[in-house]
Structures are given as structure tokens and as C-alpha cells.
Figure 1: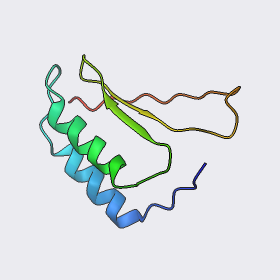
Figure 2: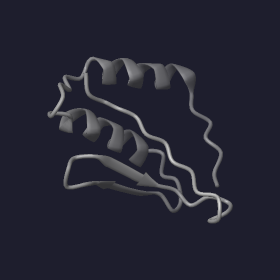
Figure 3: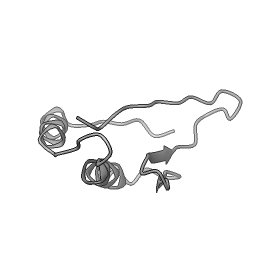
Figure 4: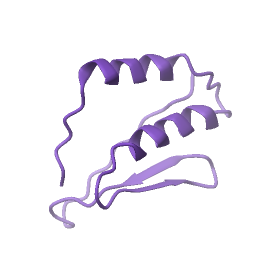
Length: 78
């Protein structure tokens, strides 16, 4: 798996922009699009980005061991 070396200033700018993006419960598509685009710009080998029928963003990355899957979940609605 590729190590992420994210620059702090750009990461903070992204998070502030995301916090200023309207995303009331039930209408998060604009925020999801921003997050999907941010991940897409990382260009990590083997990364798969999908938005589900319900509007959830699902990103899959291959790890070192398929016998030890991990998950992360977060909310983008305000």
C-alpha cells in the first residue's frame, strides 16, 4: 500500500472548503463530489471510487493482507 504524504496546508484548505459546502441531511451530493474528486487527485494505484445508489461514497484500496480488512466511515452532512 502507498504511504500518504499529505501537505498540511492543502489538507486544511480542503477541510475548510468542505465545511463551507452546504450538505444538509438528505442532500450531500455536492460534498460527496468534493471528497470523491479529492481522492481521485491522489492517483493511488488500485483505488476504486464509487458513489452508491443511495449517494454514499465508497473507496476501496488494496492492502497488504486480504485476511485483515479494515473499514472507515464518516459523515459529510451538516
